[in-house]
Length: 553
Image: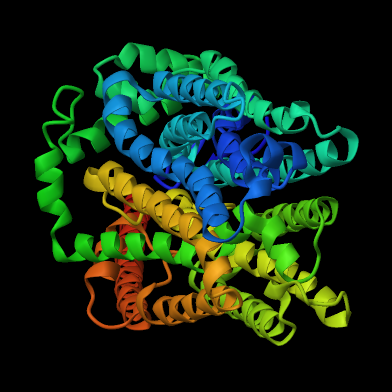
């Protein structure tokens, strides 16, 4: 039998727990993030396809009317995501994680059908993208929660990391499908139908895959179905129902729910109580921090590049559908490789805070160059030559992608979802208290989609109005993010759940908060060593007494 691992709570996990079933479960649920990843990549390129432009009249528009159509086409998706994240909270508490994820896939596919049936009617595109957004908004919140509630603590971060990996992989697929149809398909409706229809793949896979997966054990126990929770845990863990590790898991969940004061019938009724608890000073700081991180993640400009990358590449002199889509496809590959390297080898070595600061510095240099180059070369007027400066500009877009993936892209999600346990070990903790964690995640996720909506709606108008100033605006936001990260985001690596309250309640800057926690950790360690030493001395005395007694006998 392979060596066992020790979970953060102290229980020894049998090697059978780390089996293929738990990884398959995470893969199936991550089809929800695949829906998000593909949509964020394909729509910007699809709007540049000649067939799409002819069918929906983009080739006859320019200036603000063209910017308006682009903004509406993209941002209706984010609007749907915002409301989907809100509706998800009620539905998942009422019907469970599994059913809600299946519904997300069905709703997403319905939205795709609306888009395919549009036949030149842009209103159908708007409606379809809003409906797909409902499914993506709900699943973006629910997928990490579902995986985390199933994951053994020692590999929880690694399994939730699959969420981000699938998002990036399907972004690459979205970028390259547009390039492929532009090269190999004539300018008929098939050219834009194919990338739009491919949305059915992740949506349908989510439905089919989740039918084969069990309900979350936490939700089952919360609903009073403890025996069923033991059965599904036995299947996924590949252990008999009577195994002591399964008994520990069930008992841990029951104890946690008892501490939270939640039952299946009372969860929604406790919303007012949770809101009151959210107003507590330490919790208020955490929520504001989460909201700020989600907005800053969008303000630095990555989603503008994701959704409008062909237009951005054209702004630095690389015009033509094929050229822009090829450059966009390479951008997607750069991002997925950077994310995999960062999640696998970097984040647990350097923590959460340093990547935000130093990664932002690299992204800042890239954005400043783009702003300066497009100003000097009059790139937005179509006068930029394909000289060395233009190729450097293309390179800086890729450089920005690398530094963004190693900072705001991964850390923002890790900070709120992966933080219960680090990606490779057992030395991180939750940011939000468990009693209010679910509603806090709804708030921060909604802010993520609201921030995306603002950026993707504004970017076409910014590129039309302030042009090169668009990059300077994003660069200014990165500077704001660096300042915010340095003074307000404390390092959470190595901080336990109980110590989080100290971390966020301590006065002062982020470094002072961390120092206060480290002092508490040191004091507790000294106390623990002192108690252990006292126990050792007492044990030695007992052994000495026993030895004398044996000798006298």
